[in-house]
Length: 212
Ligand code: GRF
Image: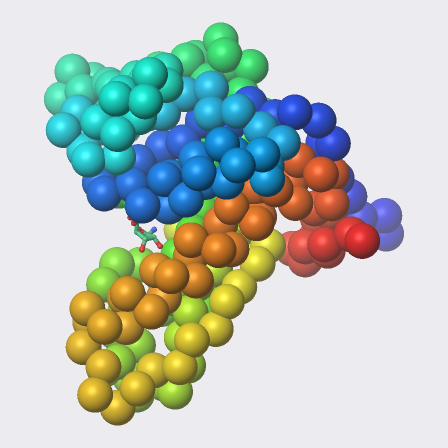
């Protein structure tokens, strides 16, 4: 049986960052782009929260921003349809979820399949969902970390691109573990975007291969 193979494009990419909060991962990616480390431009920063610090940061930097008020739409499907129109109008190559706190609808995920990535503060498939640093502590795992993965309709279950591991210490609090993981997030998320536009991300089935 032949398996579908996807290979990321080798080009100067146009990315859209989706965020709802602090935006430290977006800032790490932006910094790497400014430093010339990633062959891409931030063509859009989108938010469902117009006061999100990451969104204000983007506006201050003169980046193109878009806010859509969820309450102005009858349902999640129509909200996501409007985002999709905006994304297509700007010829976006990759959507980078960076603390975007709304679950994307299945039609949106399918429309942009293998063109949406996310970062999650745990070693997936362990601890999907929210408050996962506390869940890792409560479970008593010795290691946790961060995962960059493609987005599919099943939340936090898409093909894994990169992971980083950190120890969980006996006296960790949610804050201390989150900070240790976040430091790694700021390394692997820019790295994943870099690899993507170097044409080095290949997906076969649910496995991702990083090409030399
Ligand atoms: C990060 O912990 C990320 O893993 C999760 O949401 C948080 C976003 O943080 N998806 P920031 O807004 O990038 O600072």
